[in-house]
Image (cartoon, rainbow, N blue to C red; front, top):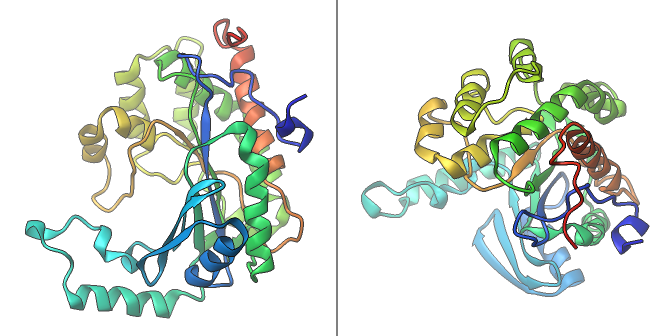
Amino acid sequence: MTESSKAGFRLPPRPLRADGTPRRVGVEIEFMGPSARVAAAALSAGLGGRLAEEDPHAFRLEGTALGDIRVELDLRAAHPQRRAPAQGSAPGLPVRAAGRSLAALLGPVVPRELITGPLAFDRLPEVDRLAALLHAAGGRGRGAVLLGSLGLHFNVEPPDLDAATLTGLLRAYLRSEADLRRATAAGGFLAARGLPPPFPAPYIAQVLDPAYRPDLDALSRDYLAANPTRHRGLDLLPILAHRDEAGVRAALPPDEKVSPRPVLHYRMPQAHVGLAGWSLAPAWNLWVGVEEMAAAGSPQGARPDPA
């Protein structure tokens, strides 16, 4: 039995990529309470590493036992230096000052976010320690706030980028979505209210049709036509943009946020940093159940990975 399974974290049926290397997952944890500065300092004290300030509301921990980690206010306007600079220049003082003022005004109600780099699956139990350090530093939050969800997002590398694999995982998610929503919203009204909107019924019917066997172009075209938004429990925009960023951005509203990368952005789970002893394992295991369903429905997906 692996250490990850001993800690309650299950492994998916295909833990390796097509090239035989281990798959990885990045984790995002949203929380309330301490500022990004205070939270980053608390993590640094517990994990080591070098603390670097990007702006007053965004910090990097470099060289920790879990690699590089970011802690920041989850508000794009608070980080104007990340915008594409006009004519190659950095944002001017008025823009930076406006960002700081807005962050100070909305800081009490806007979540902070902890973001890890890609980690091997067997290192997920160590992310629980990050949540415990945040809790000890005054981190709070039980799944949702008045303005929405406190997200626990998993950026999961798929076994491969083939259309059949991605469609199989999407199909398994859609079959599971109602159960996943019920399990995630068990925290009450606010938790249910904070969940991402479900996929549109016509799109679900399209994907679940046994005759639906798209290539990557058709998968992307159909997804974007029905879901020009990142606000889905399983957000495919990053992985589609990794393949064709210009095409994806052209299909989205101008202000829609998308970060191209070869991952499935699983956004359904919610973070409960305010609950002492809270673990990521139950939410992660629900995702593993989706992968198990996909593997069971695909002769190729059901094959064990090579040793």
